[in-house]
Each structure stands twice: as structure tokens, then as C-alpha cells.
Length: 156
Image (cartoon, rainbow, N blue to C red; front, side, top):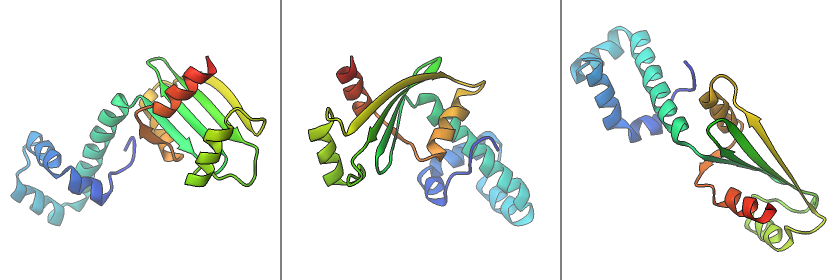
């Protein structure tokens, strides 16, 4: 498996897509039930293949990722040949960016001496979708990039 298996909730959400996937494999509903009971290892492989297909599609389309922790923000712009990073570090130990109060503090104080910025870029490895997936596994979430774009405009 290249990525990770989708969760039960994700499979439920993608039920119709999974049925279509099985149909492309010429597997009917009855054959699927039989496969799960008689050859569970083959059924597991089908789940894994479907999961990888879904992840591949999502990762190919994703343009921005954000990873926000207590005192750090890592904002990624996923370009064609490289990923760009805007990193924000809060030096005030009383602030937690994951809370409404902490983020409000940040919005008022983003230009203060209690906030440090760093920008960087990095070329992808051989498989950029694996690089993107690794960031997601580390806690990044897919976004539309509003926060990244705001910082990018501010830094220029």
C-alpha cells in the first residue's frame, strides 16, 4: 500500500465510488460478499487498492496545507515543482494558536517582537504525492490557502 487505508467513515462516504470501483474489477455485490467471507485477504487488497486510488486523486489536486500547533503555524503552497513554506513561531508562552483567544492575540500582534517568520522552499522527492501525504500524516490539513495567501501578501 502506498498511502493508508481509508477509515470506515470514509468508505461509507465513498460507498458509491467503491461500488463503481468494484464494477470496473467486474465484481458484483454478491461476488463481493462471497469474496469477503471466503477470501478476506483478497477483499483487504481491494480495499487497499481503492484507498490508494482515492488518496492519489486527492493528493494530485491539493494546493495548500496547514499545520497549526500551540505556537507554530506551517503553511504550505504546493506548487508544480516545489513546495513553499511560510512558518510562523509565537514566542509568547501563554499563547495557543489552536484556541480562539490565542488566534485573536496573534491577529492583533502579528507584527510584534513575539512573532517570528521564516520562508523556505523545497523540491519534491521522486513522488510529490508521497511528500504531500507525509505532511498530512504529520498533522497538516488540506485548505483553500487563504491564510497562506494572506501571509504571502503581507511578506511581499
